[in-house]
Amino acid sequence: MTGYSTSMRIRLPAVCVVLEVILIILFGTLVKYDHETDAKGWHKYIKNHNNTSQVENDFYYRYASFQDVHVMIFIGFGFLMTFLKRYGYGSVGFNFLIASFSLQWATLMQGFFHGMKEDGKIHIGVESMINADFCTGAVLISFGAVLGKTSPVQLLIMAVFEVTIFAINEYVILNVVGAKDAGGSMTIHTFGAYFGLVVTRILYRPELEKSKHKEGAVYHSDLFAMIGTIYLWMFWPSFNSAITAHGDDQHRTAMNTYYSLASCTLATFAMSALVNHEGKLDMVHIQNAALAGGVAMGTAGEMMLTPFGSMIVGFLAGTISTLGYKYLTPILNSKLKVQDTCGIHNLHGMPGILGAIVGAVTAATATADIYGDGMEDVFPDMAAGDISASQQGIRQAVALAVAMAFALVGGVLVGFILKIPIFGSPPDTICFEDQIYWELPEEEDEDHAEMTRVRTVEEKPLNA
Image (cartoon, rainbow, N blue to C red):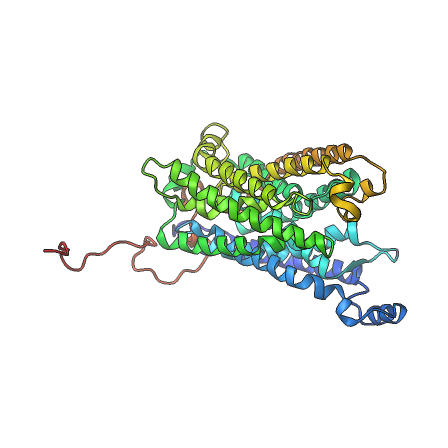
């Protein structure tokens, strides 16, 4: 370990400083407050709309959801990846780094497509912050596939390209195709998962077995990861409903996600015990598959899926995800050479596809009798009579194909870019190791020892 130099003393500061300077210049040139954030603009708006009060500002409707999403990004995703016994600093720390960059870059990239006004400026408000966090979520999902095997410089470079591709993909799906995906089953989860899987396949490490003994968890690292799970589980209803229309749409999305997650959790516990020969639970399943219900509800959450329908979707998501961790992940690794550290295919990939399919079916069966006047919020083109329900269902299916195409092509391109030696990829023999990038507190021994059982007195039976 002592003989290896990461060369990060120059590379990482240079990349961080250059990227932030570019961001500051672009923000100074292109970005301004929207009318609900600008002092002059908001008070002018109030005067022009006599019935408007301060509490009508979108901040009071959206900020609570933004807080929840923000917690998910920095605490939920960060701690979920701390299961690696020797990579806790890297999991939380690099999550912090790339999320902080990505949300700034995403504000610009999404602004070019969604927030550019007649004055040539990107107008930003609280909804811009939520959308930027959504984009960041996709990057963090991809991060899960390459966790422990990439340098911080590689991660930042990946974020630069992935955020850009995400913004284009999102624009095509929502504005060109005309699909609905408020909670991001397709734009966030499916895209982020398969982008990351392709990147990690391109970065395949034939000698990774030499670091295999460090890829597992220990008791306390699994407990830390469970903190991330609980935060994500609690706040996922806010994630899916954060940018839906005010009123019944937001209410319904949160409720559908709430019941989907609960049903998913029971399915996960059931399947985890079932696939174990001794009937024991696997903490990997509980940490991850229990969240699949939130992923699967990203597209159809705002639709009239009904509470029992959302529970069925959640149960299916938990089942598929658990079986994926048990049976599919080893096949992907051994046969397809996809080294998926966090199992993002099981948590985000397959449940994301399930969510897209459910969204397509639900949209195709939507009727005016079911939605009434609410059709205008959920399916405005259908409400206007421009398309039929079946055509909206086709749009949803096309959107899934678009998300997959952007993820696969983009992942290949970015994967080959990350193979450039200058970005400082760690050797196969010392992956999943904090010591190569972080100053660690003094350990009890030189091997970064983990929790061990120490016997101080001879153990005797209690009834001796």
